[in-house]
Image 1 (tube, rainbow, N blue to C red):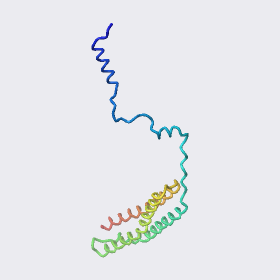
Image 2: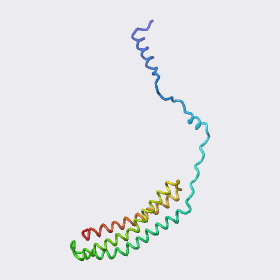
Image 3: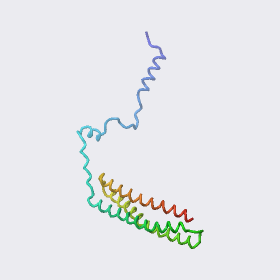
Image 4: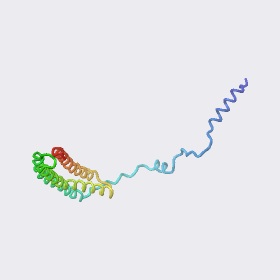
Length: 167
């Protein structure tokens, strides 16, 4: 029995479709680096990153500066709160006194915000100079959290006083 012409035509089309045209397709064969990696037994262990011996002292100095700023801020805060409680309408003498107390409060806050900015700068400089050890990264993160918490609390209190005074 001889195959029919339609069957032979379909078989020819099927065979022709199985042959992909040659083109600029990348080879699926392993590249030289992949062969070398497969041949090597293990990658070398990463070199541990050592702690920066001077970093804790620098961070403590900046954190202490932020805490001093908080102490200065607290001293100015009670005066600003008293003046805000006594503030009259905008432009009155008591309103001006409250505005001046608020300005002194914001100036006292500058020590904390400067310390926070200096900690951020130190963190960026350290990270760009070399990889940080996990302990050093945690020290930096803790100093930033402490200073940022102080600065955020101070800002929140200033906003409340501004609303009370009618800034």
